[in-house]
Image (tube, rainbow, N blue to C red; front, side, top):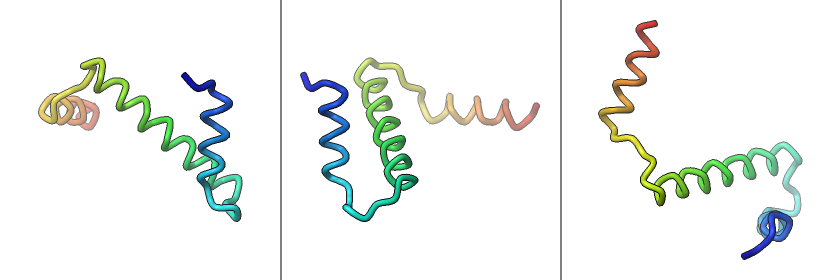
Length: 62
């Protein structure tokens, strides 16, 4: 299993050479969110679309 530093080095190597710091941070944040989502999915920790709709509706009615 790769270390966090190795993962980050691989991620940075795949980015365009002229990417700004803001772009790199935004892409890294997106990558982390995707990885967390995939881990949640693998662990069965997900919500159905209907459950999510109900949660959003409850936020909007507050």
